[in-house]
Image (cartoon, rainbow, N blue to C red; front, side, top):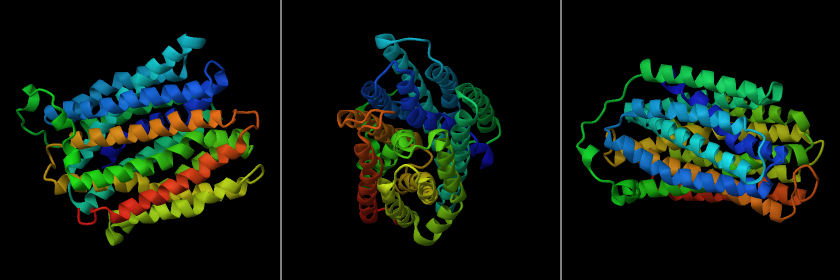
Length: 405
């Protein structure tokens, strides 16, 4: 399980900087405005999201050739990451084109690697207890990567983050490709079959998948908005300065501490009910962030710690529920990549909506980073809107037909 899960560490080191550091990084460089950054993220995420089902279909028609997909993704990830965080001194249209190109390389490599990695795990076991345990190991490694990505830029710089990402990516890929359990490769005659829309949309014919996917979208937007706005809120509203990264670290350390608890809760309550409990906990705690201001570091730390505990459920339980949906549909060992391709499309769209809508709307409402203007709108977007969405997601999940998967 550890050899399998370690590949999640570098993937998480890539995911966190894109939606937390990139907006602030390019806003501080001054080459792009907040509205342009948000629009670029929305455009790149949307294009990448619609590529994800195609990537899932490509892996599926090859009979689940997950190793090949990982090998193809590696150079895209390394080159795209280097371009994203080490841009040349460009301005205007040139800076925007460089930004979009680096984003597309990163998103394509990340999607291909993530779909292959998650499908690999879903193909290894369909037992409810084992699948949540396997997902917890993978996401725990991912949390270690997130914490590394949170600490390195604060202590060192983005160069250190880039070197660490490249080293862990190669090491994690070696463990996955040569030491992890290999899932069976299905014998299929789909390699010569033409691409049809019905194949890409096949998971949506399953009622349980449709219900779970809707929950994913609503809950994903609820989680992505505060992640996108975290540094803006911590630095402009709370005036935490260089200490902001420590609160991000506290959040993910708390999530890592809860990773063993949520699979245990899922065994007692069921995966769906345990996930509902985590959503309610998040909403009950995170709403208090709206009333915070300069000097409320201790209160913000408590909110980060408790909401981080709930994050463990968001990481461990949805992939386990999806594995159950795949098994109940009779597609285990054959079509995992098709499901995870569509699933990753949904994840990409939630991140696209969070960045592409929240940032331009905040700019329209008068929020300007570093000036103290529009802080009320920033607090509402950061705290109140995600809590409302969490409650909607909890209600949808409670009514979803997932408890017998």
